[in-house]
Amino acid sequence: MGTRLRVLAAGDANNFRIIRLFAASAVILSHGYIVNGGYAAIARDPLERLTSIDSGELAVDIFFVTSGFLVTNSLLRRRDALDFLISRVLRITPALVVAVLVAALVVGPVTTELPLATYFRTRALYSYVVIDSLSISPFHFRYQLPGVFEHLPATGVVNAPLWTLPWEIWMYGALLLLFLIHGLGRAFPVILAAIVGVYSLVALGLVEMGTNGAIASRLLAFFFVGVAMARYAGRVTISLAVLAVVTMLFALVSLASHSAVLLPEWLGYAVLYVAYAPAMVVRRWSKGPDFSYGIYIYAYLVQQLLVWSIGPHAPLLNAAIALVLTAPLAAISWYCIEAPSLALKTRLRGRLAVRRAAKLESVATGGTIAERAA
Image 1 (cartoon, rainbow, N blue to C red):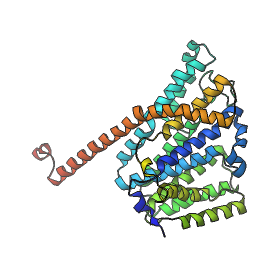
Image 2 (image 1 turned 60 degrees about the horizontal axis):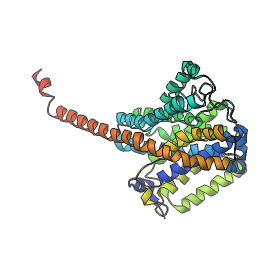
Image 3 (image 1 turned 120 degrees about the horizontal axis):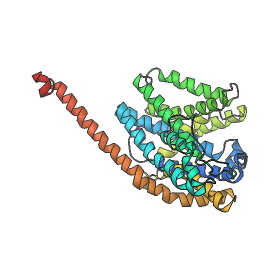
Image 4 (image 1 turned 135 degrees about the horizontal axis):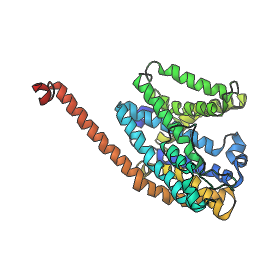
């Protein structure tokens, strides 16, 4: 027994806020090892030692599955490309721009080893602000500010997690393109099979695609598994029995192939089970502030500042302190930037609806007064 995903997704009760907070916290945990011991130290991450997938990597996968499902659900419900674009820009960009400016204009001047005049004359500063704020290309992302964090274990890296945002924006673009060319219809199973197939070949080690190719294949697979769950929500049943079968299949195939070839499918179902299974939903968390994005875009900066100020220390201690210190920043981001941006989105959506209705009425009545007079 179980309930169709479409029925559950039609309501407001879900655990997505909890899931995103968990994922953001997992990112902080994995980065606790990196900022205190360099990138090789990620091998000490508990999940990495157990599965060869570190906590931060799994968290990013969770974010992409969740994002793929939610934005597709919204797009298919409203079926409005302009609304989709406005919603995505207002959800990501305002808070991101502020986080980039905080790093460049507040943290940078305090921590740089360069004279301030030199720091503000350096072209790399303005390149960082423009490129990372726009998040247009994942291939030209900027990790460094002039003279900042140059002698820390994670050398010169200011805010590493932001690298995923250009990829997410590209996923939105790919989804919107498919929507506009009717690629979410009969052709979608073929497109999905191609995306998952490429990921599977890379995961099994049968195809070498280079770093960017491997990242793209992985993120596409997780995002579009989320898209598929939304696209076929009327056919997906959320039940513990199905989760048990999917988990067993995932475990058996992983052990036999020594790979995570079925991870996107398993994670996609597991995330949506946790999000919607009636027995698991915490209703008081279904609405209200969502601090996960603010935590995601500020925590690494805070973790680096901790190492810069007191030196390398225990990764778990770093993660715990960073989570406590980042929470107020995330709250400020939510109440001062993200929530007002979402309110603006709602107002713009209302205006678009009014204009669309007026246009339809104009067409139904033979055009505007000016048009009829002409």
